[in-house]
Picture: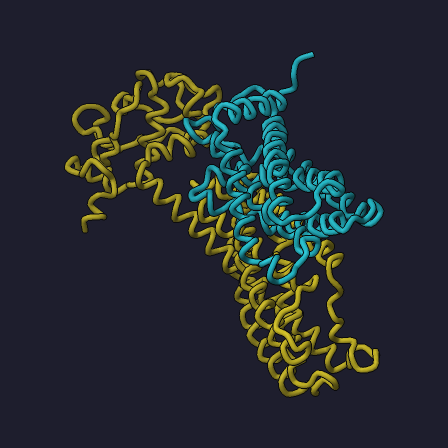
Length: 226
Length: 348
């Protein structure tokens, strides 16, 4: 059985990333910087704030900002030497490009999170181990939706002028529900609550994912059309 | 279509003006003060209709976006653009009038409550939509990108509302205060009148903005046509005559004679030789095309029997169209025109 087109595209992106490592490096250090700003913004030691109260916010702002970098890069690398045109010419349905790019973006976002979460646990001295699995579930489900919207928008903004400016402007308002549900669920995870307490939030995020993956498959054609 | 819009406008304009005066009269003079909130409650006769119009225009954006992607008629895109601009304006009115009311009543300018937050996000989506449009590379790309965002945004806004509601509480039901009796009849009539006025105002502005957008498109097209008339004819006009610019071999004629009956192109003028009114007269010979032979076409469109060189029918059609577009220059046959059309206009 031949490999599906979207897996080939995803593999291409991963190979490119493994050879250059520019996306992961940039996103990771950017995430680190965001954490640094947070440590100044909320002085955890002096103000006596526990990480359980504000930690979810720190995790989500870091995720959103670093994900924007990865998503932006996803199509900016294709802009060089007209790769995007070559990509659209490949004999596969445009939705395969969308799914491939979505998959690679999700993997990048998750890779950065896998690196930054332990670091934030060190910085803000909270216990990640008991909450690790629930947080991983919440982050995975929300990262898919965030990347689905981001991939669709990134394909458009990469070809517009001043793309760096446009993607956050488009993506952040549209991804509001994910941020709300993600922060709420993560807070419950950090508080050590059971899945029953935040399961509905994860389910809602999963519905959001489904809606915008379908929308992306249907609309991606128009986003890359010449 | 254009005439219908114009007529509609002439009817709507005085109606909207009269209704606006009536609204202001009713809101500030007829309607009594609300029992608990006092005079500041009157802002809701403007606040709620603006909110309704901003949501309505978002629906128009969604509709225009879908119809554009479906039919590829630029008019739908122009409609969506017009609605988005109006939506952004009315949304801003909602966001300004809301806090003015909230400050004395809730004691705070802003609260992160479902409807407020959704309206703010809606405004941000509108802004993103308009910025995206301004950053596109060309008109077709602008329309496609905007349509995608219009559809995604419309799907998103109810979800945003739902998510914020889950996060925070409900909006106060402003008209239910005063013992739960609901709205007094005089207030209700005023409120309905305001809703009607705002809706009609929205329709009037939408038509005006839509027509402006159409005119802009037309102007852009005319400019393009002036700058490279040949390309414009090749792309848009030849297909209308059944002559496809790319697929048809230059020498081939359409199977069925199409177009108007044979008419001599330049009565009394020699069709060959130094006159050659077509290209040089107009100065459109920027990079002569392979197979291009204006002078060889002596006959007319749709005449099978005209024996001429390769591309004759096509080039004849070209000459005809060019002469329709720029009749004066052709008649004058002035070969001293500058090489770039429009250059002398720039100079003068």
